[in-house]
Image (cartoon, one colour):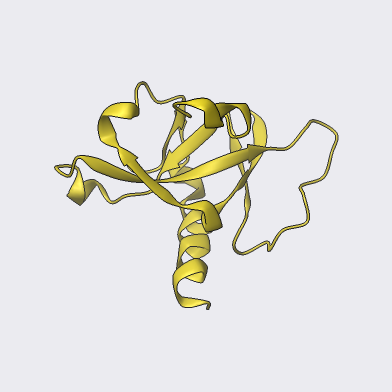
Length: 105
């Protein structure tokens, strides 16, 4: 489901514990999903110096992460197992980041 956050499959989970499915549910019949990794922000620390519009800070399960829209990728839908949460309440920031990546505005 769009904006579901999943544990990152494979070895990348050491760097990015979660990925967010940003693909429209209308395209759920495709066997791939468009994902964006989440970079954790350590408690008590500020977010890394990134472009705010491209890399907004989002929350998942009470923890803060940087959405790395510039590292968008696709993955086989079958590799995304049980979601850890959903970021639909942060849809605006996520969509604006992807739009900025594509259009630059």
